[in-house]
Length: 366
Image (tube, rainbow, N blue to C red; front, side, top):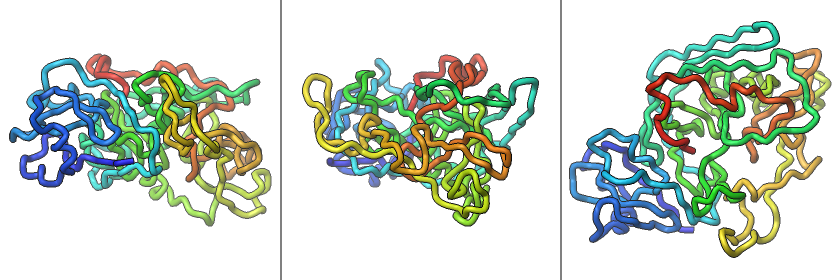
């Protein structure tokens, strides 16, 4: 698949245009602002993001209405429609070299049956530059208040994680594995895997980016957080965060025998695999072969890894010596779990509390 990535920022100086791939500008040659264009498998529109007259083909997934007013183009907001059906499994990242815009504020308390987590959503580690070519939004402080069960219980059946936060890190930044990106823009079974590389999301080295509300959130392994917590293969993972159903989240490493702290430390392995063969083809079906481009490309193979269908297991961890169910972030898909073993808090279904200005800030992004 022919891949492309814009290496400029919204509001970038005209001199930076020299860093753009030629295909991004050639696609808009002789066209007018707002005209449809295509680069490789990505459908987009032509925009003038600088003071020069050079038009750039941007993917339709970018919500230009969220860019500063001088960069907005009159007309309807772009829609997110993609044609990519294969990817190389690599999502380009933006260097995480920017100091957080404010101090991270997180409080956790137990109030009756609830563990109450309040946070401003600002990380304790450096982030990438936002907005950037794959993500047009700026990080802003949030007003999160989540109530999760203080004594969670395993439910009779698992609950899928939809387009919502799976949980929240101990630094107050949410884990949000799903992307609101579909083949042909149809909200059917062919939803793109966020980090497959098929759709550029403008994530930084922490595999995180920003919602229209200014909410910074993780789509993959939160490398900056793991580094600050000194996660290593020598020890069981420290607590990384809390899932919406109240169970703890760890990362990468646990005891080889989850019930025995003397069994040594092992890397936790997902039990998901890419399906074999060809996808269905035809009307609204992508065709091609299963390769991880879409969430539906994966299937759970019980016993193939050390974790269950929700990327978790029962453990006796340093935080819970008496035992608990716990989730693990893994290097392999799904990285962040895609289902809950318990009952997720309604606070996560509703979304975080936001200021009136934040409400209506735009559509969900990635």
